[in-house]
Image (tube, rainbow, N blue to C red; front, side, top):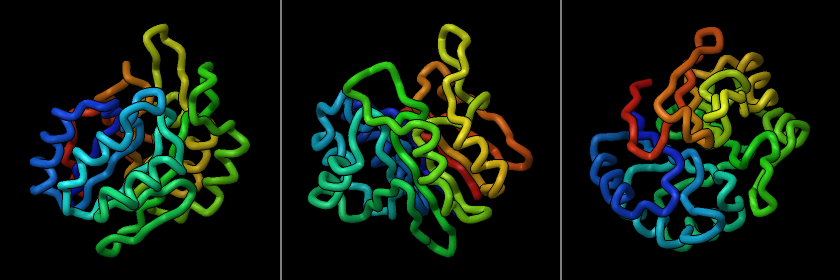
Length: 199
């Protein structure tokens, strides 16, 4: 299976057009959150991606809520599934998704989960799934510009428990393009440029 994965588009409509072209070479498209910017521009961005007819798996970032993303996708992008603490099977592969900023961010507008909420939402993550999260696991692809590790302990524990086939994330812009491993599981902080991944 060939996956086109990206994160943190933040209303970049030109890049959305580029991703739409790239999707022609993929079996599944994965968007790991932050389609909007501080809750602005979500519908326009989803509409710009809606020409993608390949099955797509999306999670909300901290810049849009689960509810808002679900509503936009339902009306604009019929090929996409929105996941937030649940899963979908595509071509025999299980994709499990969890969005939001984890742990909570300093911004009062942000769509966040604390570590306890994230742990509960990840309780049903099956073994060997493809895990799509907005926030990276702690100490992996999560280093901010000031050197602080901003990832989630709950996401890390879930990876250690279930040995996913692949983990893709975003959220920490300074870590775009970074990869890491937890056991045998590859973790990729995507960024908006789009990455083709074979699984």
